[in-house]
Image 1 (cartoon, rainbow over the protein chains, first blue to last red):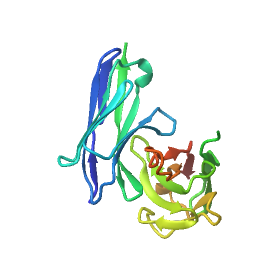
Image 2: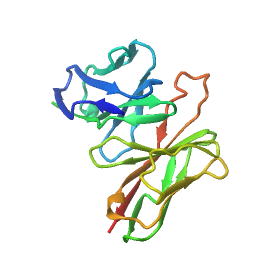
Image 3: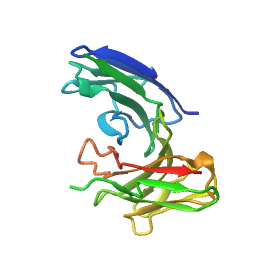
Image 4: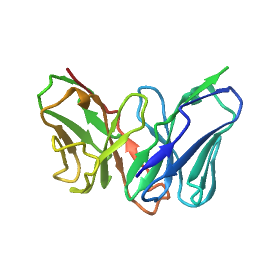
Length: 108
Length: 118
């Protein structure tokens, strides 16, 4: 079976740091993606991990532990525009299996 | 350059009618994917193509759903005899599969077609 779990909602304050966790159990694994989706818009790519460890890209970092079936997305120096849904997706062969997404609200 | 485009952006139809949703991928992208997204949920995989070949259609809910990509570019997702439960956002994505780029797996999503079945 395929199971990807993320918290449904999170809140944080502008300027703070937030960590969004994702755990997965899938029949196959060829990498893990994080996408950002603003309300009413298409998902846009944030990060891709295929090996264990941390990938850093500016204010965003993503971590993967394949043995634990675990990933997190770390957002630093939060801005109001970071209010969006964050989707964790496991690549299984060529298709993406998405979690339900975490809706993040950033308050001033 | 132009991104993934989809048409129509909105489609309202009556139960029992057939609908065809179109996806125009980024020029040169080899792979094309169809997803369905319910409100407040992540996209759900339906099917995908490499060039004109349908590689995986395991996510299509039933035989009323079909997809084609006859010339390896534009794709059409067809839903026959629509039902109210088919109402959703249908999204298309494409990727280049150029392994020279570490982001070769990245899927670029289109704006979607919002389908409402009355």
